Length: 177
Image (tube, rainbow, N blue to C red):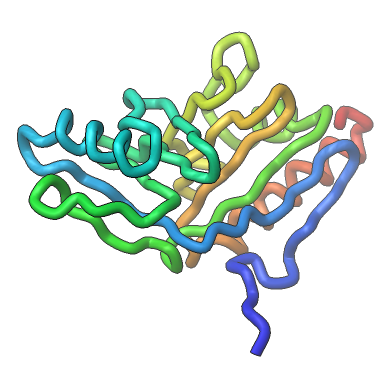
């Protein structure tokens, strides 16, 4: 058996100066601290992974571990954690898919799909937001000067690629990306 990613053979994708590649993570856990346990969860993550819970709209990285805000009192963590009695933890490894969108025209592509100001002066590296990309609910994070990671529910992976491909093709035909 050969393991396939959530995007199957839809990726990699390149049109103009923009490329989309799948981000493969072995594990992904949703962490929701119990009432009054936010500081304790943050301390436990710091002890276990070397990073604490980031503020809303932010992401932290320590080595291979990532902790990213995904909504009100909820984060995803890319490594197993022990938070018994402190937080609800659910394995979402097969529930989400992620891709990198990068290249000189990436902001122009995303500007056609996301109703957020993603310019680097406003949306800095490790800033993250929940939004719609086209009609697909996503979590988007700036990972570099011309790079973003887009996380989506696995069942919406093909729709995400379709929306990106349409925007990328449109800009390439216009010579804008």
